[in-house]
Amino acid sequence: MTFTRLLELDVELTARLRIKEPQSKLRPFGIFFAHSGDSWFILLALFIIWLTTKGLWHQLTALMAAGSVGLAVIVLVFKFTIKRRRPEGKWGAIYRNTDPHSFPSGHAARTAMLAVIAAVVGPLWLGILLIIWAPLVSLARVWMGVHYLSDVVVGVALGIVAGLVVLELSPWLVSTFPFIF
Image (cartoon, rainbow, N blue to C red; front, side):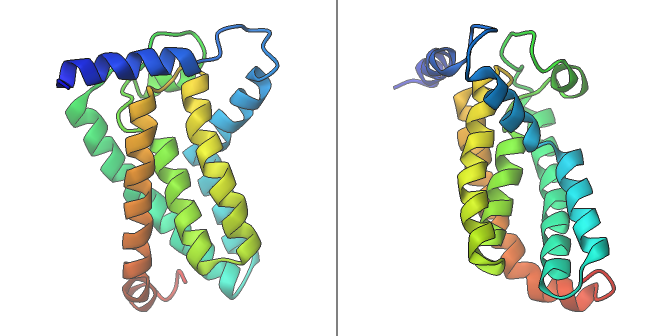
C-alpha cells in the first residue's frame, strides 16, 4: 500500500467517524471530551491540585505537569515540521486559528501520557479513569472534525512513549527539582 493510499484511507475513515449532524445526540459528548483534554484546562487543574496538596498528589501533579510541558514542545516541533492541515470544518475555531496543524494530536498525546503516569504512580481508580478518558478525548477530536484518525493514533503512541520516558526520568526530576516535587 502506498503512502498516498494510506492518506486517502485515513481521510475516508475520518469522514466515517465524524459527527456530521449538528442535532446529533453524540455531539454534546463529543464537544465535552474534545475540550476536556485542552492543555490550559489540564495544566490549571494540575496546578490547583499541586498547590493544595502534599505527598503523593503533590508529586503526581508535578510529574504530570512537567510531562505535559515537555510533551507540548515535542508535539509542536512535529506539527510545525510536518504542517498537515486540519480537516475542513467549522467546529473548533479556537484550534483552527491558534494551531492550524493537526499531526500529531496534542490532546491524544497529552491524555495518553497522563493515563500512563496515573496507571503507574497514581491510585488505581485514577489510572482506570484516565485509561477510559484518554481514548474518549482522542476519538472526540476525530468526531468533532479537528483531527484525522492517524493524528490521534500517532498522538496516543507518542503519549505512551512520553509517559514511559517521564516515569523513567522521575527519580532524576525529583532529585534535581526538589522544590517542585
